[in-house]
Length: 86
Image (cartoon, rainbow, N blue to C red; front, side, top):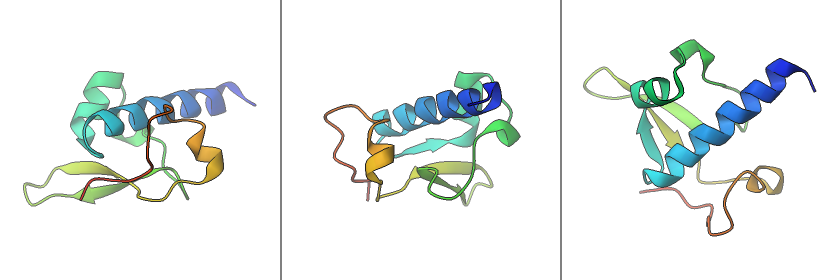
C-alpha cells in the first residue's frame, strides 16, 4: 500500500469517527477545519461510507451511508450499529 493510500485510509477513519459522534452528519467545513485539509482532499469514491450533499444555505454536509460492508465494519468501534441518522 502506498503512502497516499495510507493517508486516505487515515482520513477516512477520522471522518467516519466524526460522523459517528455527530449522528451521521457533519459539515464539510468542520471536517476540513478539524483535519486541516482542503475539501478536495476528502476521500471520495464508491462505497466510501458517506455522501456529500448541498444544503439550502449553500454549504456542503457529509452524511453517513446507512449500509456498510463487512470490510468497512472493521473501521468502526465495537458499539457501532451501522444505522444512520434519520
